[in-house]
Image (cartoon, rainbow, N blue to C red; front, side, top):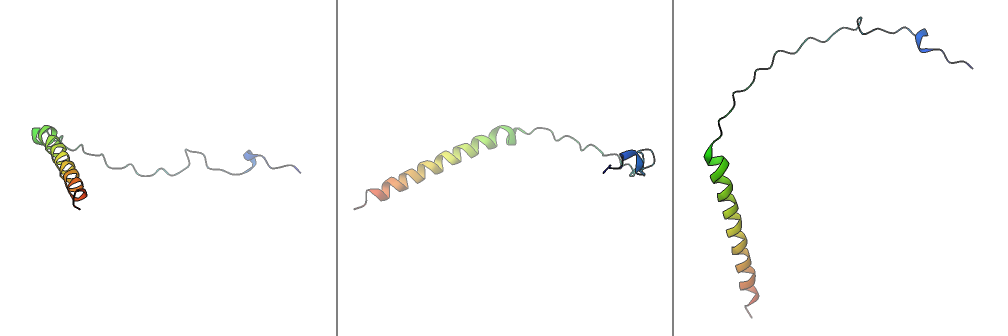
Length: 68
């Protein structure tokens, strides 16, 4: 049995296909200036707070382990 060739089927060429409407031009959002508070101080504070919490948890675990 012979299969029909692709050229036998009617197809729309790219020039005949309806083009979707172009999206509206995107406006660039203004760049936020870097802030020393968020770039430098906040990460240091968060790391210090995490270290303090870990130390407190270790003291609590070791402290409860010594109670007889």
